[in-house]
Length: 305
Image (cartoon, rainbow, N blue to C red; front, side):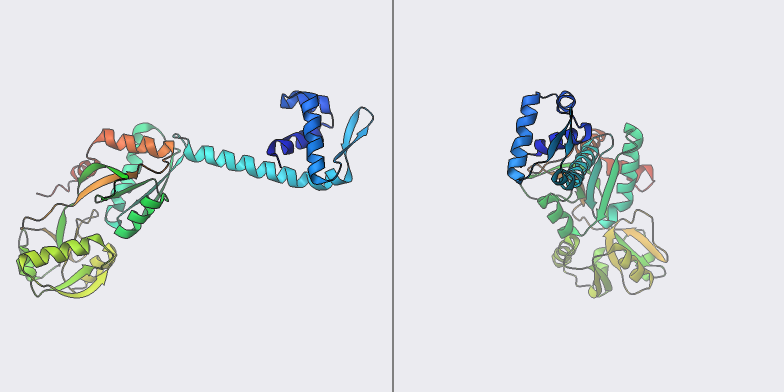
């Protein structure tokens, strides 16, 4: 069934006149009459009957009309919603990123709206583990991600800064008295680890192996906040991306004395997936702005040397 026929039917039913309906629809009266005839043939029922100079719905047309109106209304609502979604001035941007950068992501959204005056742009941000943001970017369920670099040919990226890894220690622990921590001193210490779904877990396991230490893993979790709580409860020590809210209660954050790989962050997108204009504007704003994560750390006095 031709969708245009439904618009024709609905207009004729409203105006009860072929000539006026043809004028509103900007089609010839003969084309309009032909379309309605084809619609009636497909439905197997007459939809209109003449009443003097006007036409009226038959009982079959009256049965059919509410469904046509509902269809047209639903379609137009969908078109309107889609246009709002992709409009760069009022659209929606779907982001995902590590839990450890959620506070930065929020700040970046506010900064974007303020700098561009796109105050009606909406953001959806989901906090994910490594596998989660990876799969969502690949399948197109998010527009952009904030995280460490993905090694897929279809993924493009812009470097936004470095998120330092820090040692998180309970207040009063003997290692808390120094200005930094040599990771070799973690050998045999109770350790709160990210679980095996986290990218950082594999990196730290390899790092410990390289320097020849074996911390005693007493708990595993994918959640930064749970690690903070366990360290505060003196269950062990941990290594985490620098907590952007500062040292959690009853803990101390110390830099790592050893020379370790940097945790570089990128804004990333899938070149093979459609990116709506709102997300493109946001992406391009970040690229123009440079290393926005480092700027955030500096602005909030969190530059770690």
